[in-house]
Length: 208
Image 1 (cartoon, rainbow, N blue to C red):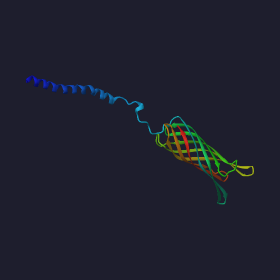
Image 2: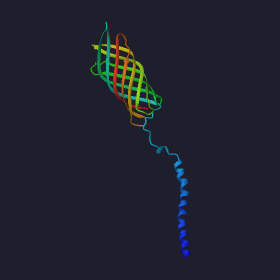
Image 3: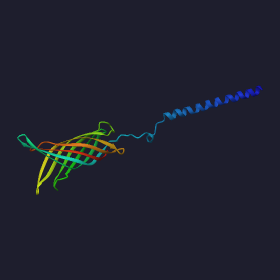
Image 4: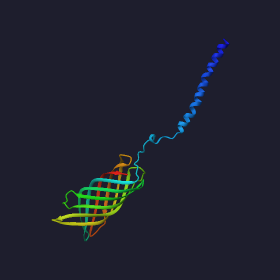
């Protein structure tokens, strides 16, 4: 009977010893696993837009052209025309928040003649308040040239310096790609009694 009790006592001591040995073996492995670096592929992808290097944006939209003519003596008259507008921006990222670009602008009035239209060239800066974010602000300086076929083969041409202002939003569709929605205003400087301005609302595909 004493031998049976001794055997039972020895058996009862074996289990705790084995469990303790197993715990001491696994503990360093668990600590090492927690301290190991996470592979880049396993990290959650960023939801922001990666903006660096080359910048290209091409878009189409709806434009509204307005001419204000000063007739003198405090009187004036205005002409408005709607039509299709297009913009191509080519440049680069100065930083993840600032893009510099050369913008080519075009406008074709819906009721104009075959020679009617406007072309513009602007040096533009686009600012993104939040790195990788979608909201954007735009400003630029350039020149507008408008040709209007008035009667027969006579074409009236107006060339003026213009300012560009705009705001919009980039909807991310890839790591460095976005669909850009923007409202832009091109404000011409008064020349020979004429002031020209455009308002455009459009969408573009942008690559950063």
